[in-house]
Length: 308
Ligand code: NAP
Image (cartoon, rainbow, N blue to C red):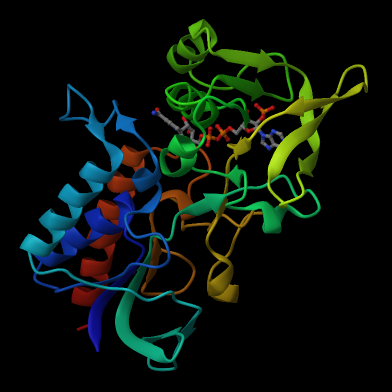
């Protein structure tokens, strides 16, 4: 029986691991399908305190992992499908043919990229449709591509893609970016980025091999439709929290974000805590996720002390 199982290895998960490991609780981290979390799909992180020169996302996550392991945290690959709260107050986690038992659980499963919901979308993933410029950008050299979205992610992805693509269309449903001023200004000043305002993509168009060749653009003001040739579409329209596997062990808002007890990371189930993007639709920053990971670790530690 583990003292603490932490589900997820993003900023929240690793920070919870560092704190619970240093409290001698020898936490077990279950890494899920995206070890290292969202920062492994980003480029430079300029706003994490302590790195005045910036640091690459994957490197930051490797440092967090090393720090957690240094204090005795263990990491296993397992994609948790269900969590059961047993009559004795402990938890049973099921992941394929494996199961794990724990006295407390910290949910730090983050959020997954959202898609537009266009027909045929799933078949196109990896064939000209992606949510990760860092992963796939280099495949699209000297061809036009587009990014959908108007937030920091869209601006960041668009900027990164200008290293490879001949042109990057930034397609946004309004005429003003949601991104922070510094990111928006940087994107709009880039001569290779062309904003396409008040528009959405209503259709993905493929070639005879089933690969992306163009999108149908729909102007949301005039209703006009046009075809825009692009070799790849990078979707950056936000995220969906990875919380569905918890069933009714937690309360969620209408978008699936876990609701914590007021001012705490504890959820309605005693011994079950939530930290980071799975419970935060408001800040969604690496540093706030790390802060919540710390808070969840402290709460789990106090919970164990109170119950032993
Ligand atoms: P976001 O801020 O929620 O932006 C999502 C964008 O997608 C918005 O512009 C939104 O349009 C658009 N959108 C949503 N649903 C859509 C749909 N169905 N069709 C078309 N467009 C749609 O998400 P994000 O950019 O991923 O950023 C998430 C968080 O991470 C933010 O807090 C951000 O600051 C942070 N972040 C920070 C950095 C950095 O500082 N380096 C980098 C990346 C992300 P509307 O604007 O019209 O709502």
